[in-house]
Image 1: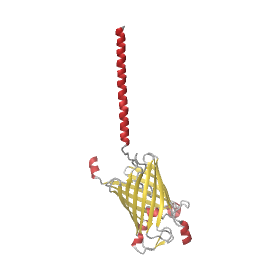
Image 2: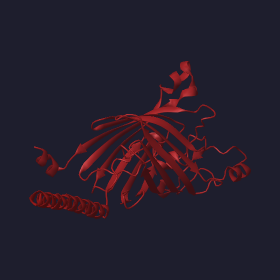
Image 3: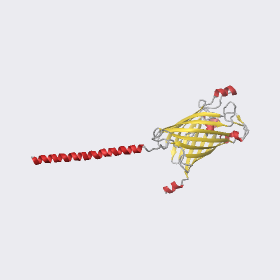
Length: 319
């Protein structure tokens, strides 16, 4: 009996030691995981693909393009849908077009240029991504600066109906600056705000100020992997009352409102949309939109983007 008792005590002692041996590694493993999680939380994890393209509809997004990559943009705006079937085939008989190029100097900095048939305008701009959304910072912030030159003959008639006359080439210039701030809330929803300042060296009427402040809001909602709903609205802080009191006629410009859908197919992005603005650069669609949704001045349009890579190191790596 004494031997059996000693045997039972010994077995119990072994079981206790075995149990402690199992608990200790488990506690050590938990401690190690906590240490790893704490260390990982110190590293920034950046948000990717807040938007699929550098343009939302008319306006820019916070996105830039990769270093040594080139974007080719074709933007097209037909005539007003309310122009009728016989007279203008619901606007499809006429169109305005812009051709543009963007090149990535770095992953966060691009330069761009384009030419619009509207007022035969050349535009140049640069965009730099200052801050990126991450687990350390809630939004992405990008700065944009642009310049445009109107090359129409002096004395032409604007879309507003006013006559524009230039006394020097300097009067043909316009400038704009934007701070683009966006947040990707989840895989489907991204929203952006765009405080904007524009300056026109020459305006068509003394009652219209040369400087204009505006605020844009926009966003996208991803329906599927390749289809996305998008929309944008720009409110200009103009003073229509002062213009109407001075000029004796209705203020000709409206806020730009656009809705559309994006279709992504590999290296291409197709953007189909309806907008009340035929302009495709900031000086036109923010400050000089003559169309009104209430009056049916809605223009069907599209953007096509194609990206080309000139990154020799990446090409060599993929071979």
